[in-house]
Structures are given as structure tokens and as C-alpha cells.
Length: 408
Image (tube, rainbow, N blue to C red):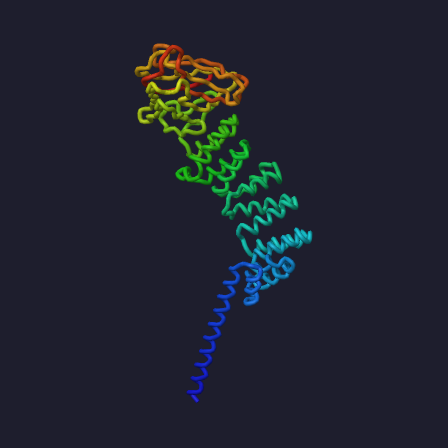
């Protein structure tokens, strides 16, 4: 009796093992057919595995006449199949014109899957339906989880409304998204909206991590774009936000004191309202912060005309200013051909220039009194070299100790 039971158990185990092997072969064959991804192979995979939601989902793409039924079968097998819910929603919206059914499907997709695609699908649906409240709710949900660049989301937001408060409320307090938004606004030349995004960003990020969050690249370039376009006020507001958050050490310029880093003690940021050194063949311009000096070397083979140094300045149009500088020249002949210039950024106003920087008087302290052109809004201060007629190219060095500019 005991022997008979053992034999029966052995046969049962053997039968189960055989059945398991057969089932494994069926699974392997079905997987092979599915990954061949043809109309015939996927149908064969579904025949072998009729309850596989993924296979049914894919077969719906190959059999458009049966698409809806196949997607419904896929969901019946796996109600968490968000992709099938989305596709059913698209069928309802685009094919049947049933927006209510489409909305139910999209919402169900977002209910079973909290990642990017269901949320972005809903945002697009409400954009097409022109339902702003729902649209901005789901754009915020999308931005909270998106692993992708967010420009398409931002573009739709601005198409839906031009109201900055509404758009800003839909942007979550995430540094990555705020930085992307500031750069999107830069690329779309919506400079006036950039400061609010940057102010939120710097509030969220510790100053020690500033370099990781765009200070030296995206935000620096954004500043440059704004200033080059003559949008002084947004650029100044962003600069102030960076300064107040400890992201930069440079001072914030004003109409009363337009220059930044005039004592040359802070290493040049080379963007925004700080000094920018221009590299020119035949010259070498170097900052020496330890001794508070800017040194310009001329080797005698430089171009006849070039910009050596520049900085955007906050100058009140039509106001009177005095600019002073302390300098020391080494072996430079007079006239040196080196002078300060004030350019209107819009280019519509003629620039004004100082006298030669080393021949204004015999003292190492020189000055230039000027009236800023009244027709311009933003200005660029440059130090330029132009070979004077009847002279050879400059050879020697100019050391600038400090530069100041004050409104009179």
C-alpha cells in the first residue's frame, strides 16, 4: 500500500515537471513571437498566451478593426495597463468624438500610473479642450515628475494664457524645473518673466551648490542675452537675486554707482554686470586679484583696433557722470591709443569716448566727465585700443589699479 502511494506521488511529480517544461516552452515561444513584432507573430503569441495584457495591447496596433476590443481585453487582464487606457481614450476622443469617455480613460490611466505619460496625456487633452483650470492642474502634475526637457510643457502653458501669475502657479518648486523654465524664457526672449523664476530658484538652492544649478552657464548666459538685448531691468533684478542669495560676490550696480568690481579684487565672473576680458592676438589681459590690479600687455603685433575689456553699466540716460581711474604704464608711448568708450546697446546712438587713458594728465589718477546719451536705455562700457595715426603699434603694458564711476 505504501509502495503504491509512493509510486503515485512519483508519477504526479514527474507529470508536473513535464507540464512545467511544456508551459515554459510555450512561454518562450510566445515571447519569441512577440518580439518578432509582426502582425502574424504577435497574433500567434496571443494565441499561445491569450491572457497576456502586453501581447493584447500590441496586437491592437496590428489589427485596427479590432483595436478597441483588444484594448478592453488587455485592461480586463491587467487594469494597471495605463498604456491601454490612454489608447482607449484616444480612440474615444479622436475616432468616436466622445470626449467624456476619453476623459474617463485618461483619468483612469493617471489613477493607475502616477508617472509622466498619463499626466502629460491629460494636460494635452485639456489643452485641446481649452479647459484652463484642468490644464494647469495637470501641467503642474506633469512637471513634478517629468524626466524630460520641459520646453513643450512651457510652450503650451504660454499658448493657453499670457498671465504670468497663472503660469508661475503651475510650476512646482523644483530647482531643475525652475532652471529649465528660466532658460526657456531666455530662448523665447521673454526676458521680463525671468527674474521671478530665478528668485524662486535661488531661494531653494544653497549658495554652495550654485555652480551645479546654472549660475556659471545657463543663468550667466541668460544675463548676457538680456543685456545684449538692452533689457536692463530684468537683468539687474536677476543679478540682485544672485547677490542676495550669496550666489555671486560682486556688487549690484545702480545709477548712482554704475560700475561693478571697480577695484578688481573679486575674480571676474565674466558675465552679466561684471568685467569681461576679450582675448585678442598680440595682447594679454590678466586680472591679479591678490594685488587688486588689471594688467594689459601689448606685444607690438596686435590688431590696429580692438576691444580689450568691457562691462554693462547702469547709467541714467541724460545724466552727468565722472569716471576716474588709477593707472601705471610701462614703456607705452603717448598717445597710447587706449581709451574708454560708452556705447548705447541699441546701436542707434553714437558712442562717446574719453581721452587717451595715460595722457589725460601727468598724474596716475585720470578722469573723464561725460553726459550719458539721453536716447539710449542700456550702455556698455569698453576699454578699446586703436592705433593713433602716425604711430607704431603699442608695445608695453598698462596696469589699472581701480576704476570708479559716479553720478554728479
